[in-house]
Length: 134
Length: 216
Ligand SMILES: [Zn+2]
Image 1: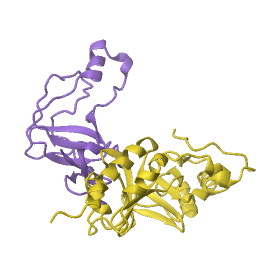
Image 2: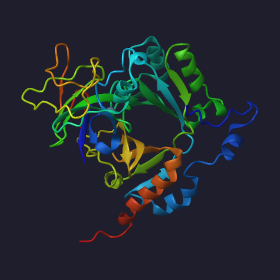
Image 3: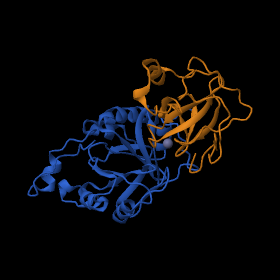
Image 4: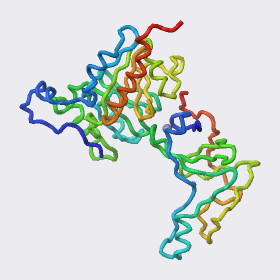
């Protein structure tokens, strides 16, 4: 059982959460211009990295809020919790996520493996956040 | 939406008559609760038909301020319970709250709380929803109440962490429920109506061991 640090409620059992899949999959700017292949890649193709993965979670039994999480798919270490809409925080020294099968066209919808810009991004460590009471 | 409360009755109907025909979600367990309660150790009872109102209003908005004027405050963060008098407001999320008030506050019994909250919200973004029939309330009291809850709740319920006057939305006995510590040895548990009988029996089962003498 993972102990997931909800940014609003503090650490809670994994059973209180639901998983929302890969984070930062942007809706295509212009869906009508996509080929069927590109559209299907947007809909169905996701990364499957061995290592750090950015994913969405919702605290469904608690505050019912969504948030993003960086999790190591090998060790299950939770590396960071950050708000929806924020950029993926840099993980210094983290192995680059393997691209898997989801190599995409120019308006890539994947998280990408280039070093992300973290200016203006608040990175919460995976410890009890502000407001946590237990 | 979960507008599931008893439909408004004509104003002429006396409140007693209205209450007499209601069936509470755990009403079938009344005798079992009485038989399973151990005075001075751990006791359980249903507090049926409390008035509950779901509130959504963005923190800091004008609507939230007007609603706070009606309830006597809105809680600011997880665990907080605000309110004044016999009105309490539990924190459910950053912009979501549950107002808990006595049975008589419900409009079907002549109360005006829900209408006052609706007027406070006005036409602003947010919601005021009568959720009185959405959940029922169990009151679990006594020195062993905490150890009964600890069998099925993974929160740290030790008094050094879980203080009287705090409430959390969490899981108890594997079902979602609100847990409100109202006193040093007293807790209110709010399961949804459809889970009430399950959780009631689950808690009774957890209480059973205290009826026997302690094994040395
Ligand atoms: Zn939460």
